[in-house]
Image (cartoon, rainbow, N blue to C red):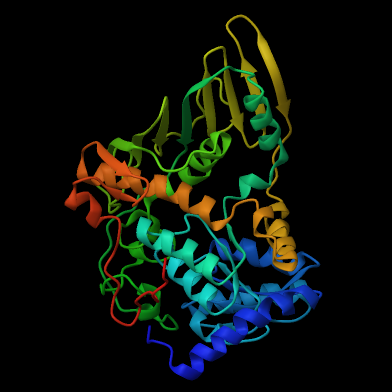
Length: 425
């Protein structure tokens, strides 16, 4: 991405000041949606809610963008334009916020550029592809006074807060261990040959900061999740939700150390690069946080109501909590419980819109720094898997202690033309 010239810099500064004023007086927040996979769900919510409207659909693939553009036009009575390159939206005054639902490798760059341009951001999980750019996104949000919500939308469910209050009141005594579980069935990724770029796809833009490679459908729509250049595996894809819940329960930040055992079991011999089976352990003072991933299971585990949940182990009992509720168990009796069928509602998005209008960053369900810490745990787990050893982590510098190989995974080399802007600490 080229550097701003003087006129562009002054324009961005003016937008940074004007945008909060604009959002505070407009009836609807103008949202540009980036990406048409998970972005389709987001676009539908932003089109339906009375406090927002979709003003642009952005995707390097024209076919997907046009399809979603027409859907949203039917919903809100006005068809938004579709564009390939989201950077052209940064100067549009009708764009108050970006909803970033691109592949992972574009999450932080899009967030950072939006903040610099004076736009608020709803960024899907994980908020970064590596640790360093996640911290830069936090700095950009703070420096430019942006509202940035992380897409860990389970935080919009009230029963979690009720459960955390029980923990604070000592319902299971001192917590000694937390376990996050990601247990589900994933399909195989058969090998495919490289091929010409499909018509209507700006593949250079899709690659963005990632290194130049031939087009392959295994690395394109959705398949990108399982390749290191663009995704973070299921640890960062679905596991981040459970990791965020356990971290939120006890207000955990960065750990002291991380280790991981992982393998390709259900996907052995296929084109997937990332592991489908993992056990990650993050070490904190007087606490172990464990993550278990099994992407080969078509079943739920015994005693579990859903495929993914968290177990919090205390000295006197333990709590099982998932998106439907929580249950507390003791040695010979049951404790408090709550159960209600979960539904994917607009609560998390409405919270974002409320904060865009009020400019109250501390009222966000999942502020960008919270998203950074949850994403950081995912990145550390993947790095421990890729290096094959226990790694000691310095929370102050967000680097590994005396380990050059591991530290190389904390950053990436950005392809020429797609470098990040400099954001001072």
